[in-house]
Image (cartoon, rainbow, N blue to C red; front, side, top):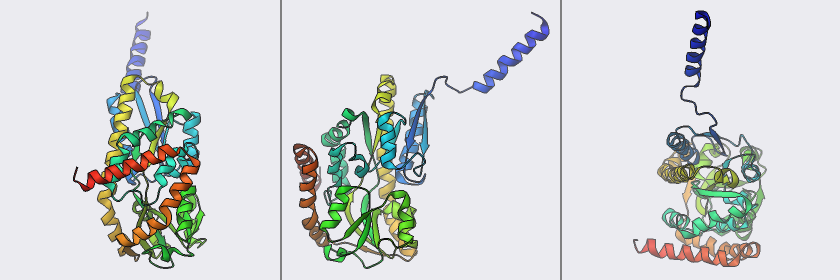
Length: 341
């Protein structure tokens, strides 16, 4: 070999070493569809997931986070995960019920009196049983990212009980049980996709809407709504699901890392969400919204008017025994929390 050829070859090798340093050939991609902005608690939790998974797998799995429904709405994203064209997504229970009707139990109104009770059930045997129930349709349930309690905003009046909802036209998720809840409370529910929410409020197509505080703040509801009433009518976690076939192709060690990362993301998103809620109430007030707490008595009146009817409706559409098990788990967790366990 001539000296000039040798030098050329050495230069090429050195250049390639710089070009590909730190890269893992054949790295597995994990694209995750998220409906919220990068600053939402759910997204912040998934940023921790990305960091953990990439570090622990030494780059063998790369995680791509796609915010603000870039890859499609919640229902569309779950459909893509199910058919294998996307690796992972988070979605509220409402859209997930299209694929697995057992998720309707998450839409039972006034089911959880506190975050601690909700987390206890979701992190226990019934929460795991719900996640596992999606494997039959090709989805691997990994955890419950935080969205928080849903509350009502509107331009008519403060909501302190069911009578105040009478006749109010309210935007809901495209979720049958959410609509059923508000029908029983005397409101006129109108389903509107998340991506069209602000425009719907701006054009006054409806009187109000319902969402967790993080979303009320992020979508700037204070610009188009007057009242925020802390009804807490539904606790709304966002399950993280993966394509089951994709997950099963990972090595056992990588599967463990993915599951560990999901739990870290879940717990951190809960912490961030709960820590922010009081500050969000203050900020909404500063922006001119009138924010009111709803008394325990007011919530109990709403519960009495809608919960039993919604549970009966859910039992018509899914496994009755599973619903009863779910309700029993809530009762047990409430007793444990009240007892200080």
